[in-house]
Length: 458
Ligand code: NAD
Ligand code: UGA
Figure (cartoon, rainbow, N blue to C red):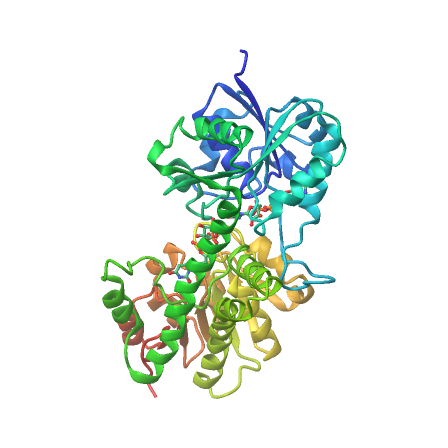
């Protein structure tokens, strides 16, 4: 069949894979190729075991792979043949040189821009899918137009708002699709082409357009606002623990105000994930760059509260367990940064594990999907840790359980049985407030939720 358009995506990660699978699924008239520098990742996309776990992804990929969705490592060929190129490479926090620990590391991004320029033989629309500092499109334009080869590149910003674990649902029915462009005739024309792609399944009132800088900045700001809500509620959870107020009741009362809304108000051990911290630090760096120090400090506070919240759990464990964790066996329930994903990037469980190890606790880690990643994250200390898939087996012989991830399965476990096999006194630190605390207390556990009074038998 002759395809209407050829789409290429550079970067077959958590964003590139699912977003392109959705476009291919919804638009059989387009030929979609996803390339990556990592041949193992591409092999996994072409296999029965996809490189990422995301509910609903398997079915879609298997339905369209080989029909109009293709994964390979032939970047140059892909660039040559494509009309539209999405760039979805990683943009982690820089770990060296100026801006280390704050700014976005744009080396992968820049390399892609140069590859596109060098391999292109016809005009292209380039779509920024990665999350980038505001004004990155300007740098992209400069690289692409640095050789005067007569090829026209039009750059669009189309940030991705999907969350892991609900990625397919989010892609299928997004709150909004945002497309930013230059407001020139060519820019507006390219913008309309991208609108047409999404309009295959997203209603037009949810496809919003803006100038390119607003689009780039809106992505950073959306993540900053989401993370800010979590740090806000987590900061209040500390006050609740001092005052016998209950964070669930406070969040419920506050969230019922329709101006505030009730989502993203679950107090927790802290937020994780590859993006919140990196994107806020990126925003902070940008503000400092523009001399906006008060604004930078304001947003930096969101990350500081998140760090404080993680350390607070360690201090709580120490306080509860007689001021020493040395030799105590502690089982982490969950290692993924949130439920329904195997992703552990920036998971609070990484920090908690390392701190417990420093306190010389013995660690057992259980998770239904993230044990392989957990072993990689803790490679330097993994010999000292037990990684056990079955939560009953994992908790056996432990002094304490600490819930790190809100996996549903943890709410349906037989805690009588778990209690019987644990050392006494037995403790539960519910870092997600998902368990039935009254029931656990009745069984005999000493229970320490987030932002609620502890329930102890002492
Ligand atoms: P990822 O690390 O999972 O995937 C990026 C991929 O790009 C990797 O497989 C890497 O090998 C590949 N790559 C790097 N340079 C390349 C090159 N020159 N050619 C070909 N492939 C190359 O990252 P991700 O989670 O998919 O995130 C990608 C971007 O999307 C980031 O900017 C991130 O901030 C943003 N984002 C992520 C999410 C999320 O849920 N993970 C959501 C929204 C936005
Ligand atoms: C987040 C955003 O929600 C997406 O819109 C965005 O596209 C994405 O980042 C990105 O840019 O990468 P994600 O990190 O996948 O998505 O997952 P979230 O559901 O936002 O959860 C982030 C963290 O916050 C998790 O650790 C989660 O457990 C925690 N969280 C979330 C809380 O502690 N409390 C809450 O009430 C909600």
